Length: 173
Image: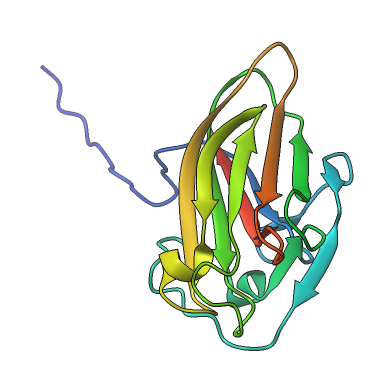
């Protein structure tokens, strides 16, 4: 047989196809984009701070400026921060990105549930407890499915007076 030279490459290959890298509290930051105006966002309160964020718990994290901005629901139990994301029918992985922005928020001081397309998929999320400190990044991956042309409805439901919040969202297929 004929010998052929094979050139192997690994740069740029990923396990997943990125659908979106959304910087929910701020402007475009590298590959992370501000949430498109077509994606319905309710209660788009935003906040930011100028303290370095410890990203040691998160692999493949976004730039530092991404972690220092966030969007949040109104204060109080039952308030909802929601995103209506127009994607084609199919299976997705949603990777939620947070860091606790309140240095005065103790463990248990901010709790919220995550609901995707009407189903609670994670309960009593406590970013301060999961990260182990405030100003420390944490990421959580959850599966999701879009069906019947409805896209993805992602809702964070506050369970305490301190509201649900989110820094960013990765969507992969």
